[in-house]
Each structure stands twice: as C-alpha cells, then as structure tokens.
Amino acid sequence: MTAAIRLGTRRSALATAQSQQVADALAAVAGRPVELVPITSEGDVSRASLSELGGRGVFATRLREALLAGECDLLVHSLKDLPTAPAPGLVIAATPAREDARDVVLTRDGTPLHLLRSGTVVGTGSPRRIAQLATRNPRARTQDLRGNIDSRMKRVRDGELDAVILAAAGLARLGGHPTDLVGEPLGLSEWPTAPGQGALAVETREDADDGLREAIARLDDLPTRVAVTAERAVLAGLDAGCHAPVGVHAQWRDGILRVRAVVYSPDGSQRLGADRSLVLRGGYAGEPGSGDGADAAGDADPIARAWRTGDDIAHELLDRGAAEVAP
Image 1 (cartoon, rainbow, N blue to C red):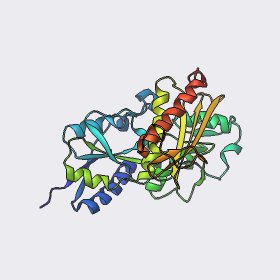
Image 2: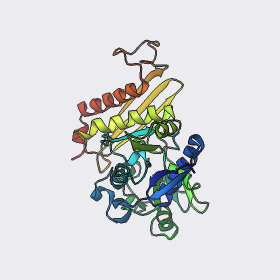
Image 3: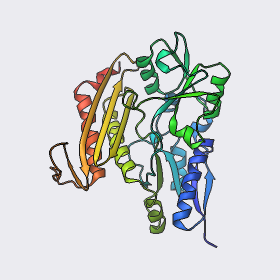
Image 4: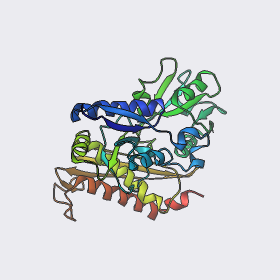
C-alpha cells in the first residue's frame, strides 16, 4: 500500500478547508493519498490581539517546527501570515491560483462602509484595516476582534458589532458569505490588502524527495507567484525602516505587472502611495511603451524581476518619508 503524504494544518475550519483543497489537488497529481495532520499553533489558543502576539508568523511557527521535525511532509499556509524572510531548511514549493484578494465588509442592512453613521462599531484586529477605515469613514470606530469567521459574523448578527471586515478569500473557501448578511467588496485600488492576501503557500523541506517536490510544483500558478512575489518584496523592503500599516496589491495579466502600495499612519490621517506598471512577458521586461527588450540587468526570470520591482517600490516609499508616516 502506498504511504500517504502527510499535510500539516491548523485546526480552524478555514485552515482545514484550504488544506483539504490542496490535499485533494495534490492527491490527484501525485497519485497518492494525502492525509491531514492537525497541529495547534500559539495563534490558535491565545486570545491576545495579533499585534500583541507578534503579527506575521504567529500561526506559522509551530507548523514549521512540526515540518522540520518530520511530523508531516508539507504545510499549507495563508501566504499573508508568513514572514517574508526565508525559513532555514524549508521552501515554498508552490503557490496555487489565488482566490479573491479583496476585503469584504459584512453588515446586517447593507449600508456601505463610507456611509456608516457616527459611532458605528466595526470589528477588526488588523492595524491596516483600522487605518484604512479611519481614512474611508472617520465617523466609525473599531473594536479589536479575534476568533474564527463564524464567531465574527455572529457578533454582527447579534448586534454586538455593526459591521465586520473579513478577507473575501476566507469566505469563499468556506462557501461564501451568508445570505443573512450583506457583503460589500472593497476595491483594491483604494483599499489594497495585505501582501499575499487570497493566496496560499505550500511549504516543504528543502531535502524533501524529488517526487514530492515535483508533485507539489504542479500545483503552482505562475501569475499568482509573480504577483505575490512583488507584494512580499514591498513588505520586506519596508520592514527594515517602516513600521506603519501597509496595503499592497499586484497583478500580472497579459504580460503587464501592475503593483500598488500604500503606507498608512496608524490613525489613518496620513498615507503615502506608489504605483508601478511594467511589461513582464516571456522572460523580458521593460517599461510600458519601451518595447520588449531584455531587462537591463540581463534578468530573464519573472520571479526575480517581480521581487526587484517590489523592492524598488519599497525604497521609493522610504525615500519619500514612509518611515515618518508612523509616529
């Protein structure tokens, strides 16, 4: 009997759902069964806010320890939860096709976010969303929010909250937003989301056997990988000298890579944005209108070019004062 591939996953409904989707896809291409191995992380048991727990990486640390210890063969992460620095001994072997990257506001009556009345309570624990809400509707106030998606929506149904802001991808992976609440998707041009939002990362050990690595690689979606690489490069470049909330969204379509990044002050009173578009097609890159010439550095790898583009944007924002946006 063929041994099952062991996929480590957090125990939450969302983590289990997205892990099962990857497990099913991997089983189909590998010709082997894939079983889920539940793992509990600190972020799952602590009720502290994400900022108090340390933000990115709080959900990944325990899972990565399990992978390195041989308790499982691969992991599925929400890419937005992963630190941008590589994890020694591990590799992101695939980024499957991305779900909707937008945020969604859920309310009982469908009132748009910008029209919510003074004193309205909106649930979110994200510093980025708090800053963006203050920009979009300074009359509303936020309440820190933890817990799974169902518990968050219940607080809106029960009237404890007037609205909640959630990732559209999470709702989609759990079957879509409920019929008793009204969803308002927030456009990415004015409300860019967390780098990597909507995307998954399939991670394994660097020394994993070639058969497993090759099977995982068949799940990779190049347009998704290019886009999220640019987004994470912006975040990595800003992390060195800027602690303000940041929203980034990139898209690679029809040979054009477009990236938008915005740095916000925590109270939403200031924001600093940058946009970049470039031709990135068939191993060639250049500014739109300049023709398809080889990149000046001779770099024909779209992943490497996407990273350099995001890094350039981060340095531009820092040069323009991004580090001073946060008090």
